[in-house]
Image (cartoon, rainbow, N blue to C red):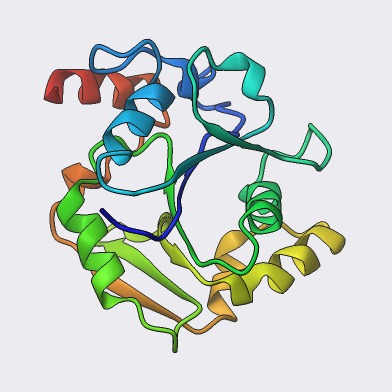
Length: 190
């Protein structure tokens, strides 16, 4: 079991999906979030769910609710709330809509991360996977500055940070369920 806290980001707007993807049924579970929580709890000692409102979930878990305006759907709010709860800790983050990121990918990212980097993130031929990897607590101030400037582009912040990327070839494992077609593809892969 990995001792670094794992945070599942499930507070997005899901505008491309047309409904809250965190609540879609998946792999025999009532929701995608519950599925992610169940499987990641077998890898990490502590798993948390970053969200806007925990009352939408009907299962027991450690929830971290955003404290910022409810109309902000950028990961910025989730990171700030997480750092406030998990003080002085590095975190492993994973988006709720990436159900095929497996133990081997997670273990590789954790093994490769060193204190000299502010983040260690997955990368595929399609680009950076900013919500799959380790974020150092040293980035907390940058997230607060982003919120203060009302600038929520995670990629921009990462460009000005000392990060390392780990390349992965299997792009299917990085399938993000952004659209209905992605969800249907994921269901067929099960």
